[in-house]
Image (tube, rainbow, N blue to C red; front, side, top):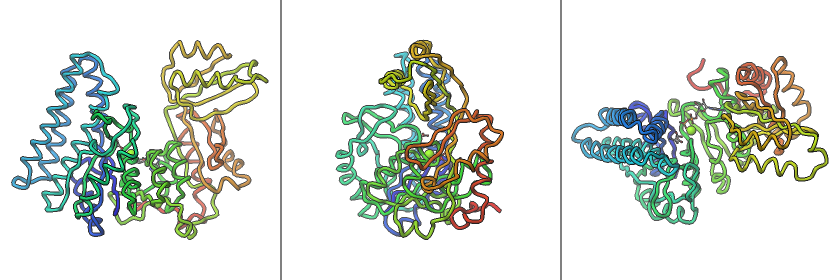
Length: 471
Ligand code: ADP
Ligand code: ASP
Ligand code: MG
């Protein structure tokens, strides 16, 4: 039995939904799958705009945007669910959801305050709507499919916006609600990304969290595979939007995939890998538009990996834009125990997540998500020494299990980066990545240079493939 997750672009239009349904139906031949869906592409962003507009009291703007959401989903229904095949029922269900969304808009507008809790409530409508249309479209085609409200299964803690599952509850619910349907041969269609607290308040797992939902269900159901269907041919040697020549990676280890995801490759949510590793379930990243292309297999199975070992060092290059460097320079650091502890305590209190770190005897540089930093924060940091901030930088990381035992890799990296102004350098303790920071404007030069250095050789044939549909 497989868990199949389809991302926003894979369910964003009627044509995409039809394509995804044909993929699900083909899989159902080998046993009914659990289908986990994202919201239609762009809808979560629209819902966030609706939330903000409601919080600001811009009722008209919020309701206008709700109108857009309504038109989009009713448009899908018009194309996918014929009259006499359930159109009336699904239209009613969508209107019911939109009615609740409008109530929420008005409630937040009256209170005049948008909380994390209500923001999650707003965001949940994207997945509730996409799955409602998808299940109805499958049923209209005569397939056995049932819509399940994931909030009855995915019970989470109360960290709104970044909720995590209460595993014992979720496992029991999965066995009680989802497993019997699958065993009876019914495809289950449910929402990624969202959940609910024990007392029934809606939560979300964080942006891009549908991948995580799918991986969790894969582990709880002991599924044979976790399939992540998206808009590119699997995990690639770099984001194809940055490097047009990026290749698909045929197979990679769980640690490589996790590292890459944490370092910014948006194709997988960083937490997807952990549940799969725990139960050793292979993860396949596949392209909805090229369903027969091989995509990427993520596994620790030595047999699957052995045929694919190659002499190259680097598996992939990850880029994370929208970062800034905070540099603190101080003579007081020298030989003073506790300095770092106190400094990082400031970052923790201001809820800044530190990504990359580089230190010398007299200075500490860190990267954090770019934002206008408050005077209070700068004041507190100023007590440690001189503070310099550089906005608009990107981290670039070179990832590969073989880096660990390779000599000369740094030389090749820096050779490929000649002419690029490197703002920071750091090697991960795991030794499977080398990272550095450049100005955002230098990303294309830096990354394309590295890509040429590491992926143009013939030694990579069979491991890296030209994506399907490219000459
Ligand atoms: P989905 O909506 O299916 O979850 P996402 O937009 O979250 O899709 O992730 C897919 C996108 O990730 C691709 O369109 C691509 O631009 C980007 N991406 C970044 N790094 C990589 C990489 N190394 N391999 C493949 N895609 C990547
Ligand atoms: N719809 C959510 C988002 O856009 C979750 C997801 O797509 O994984 O972040
Ligand atoms: Mg995604």
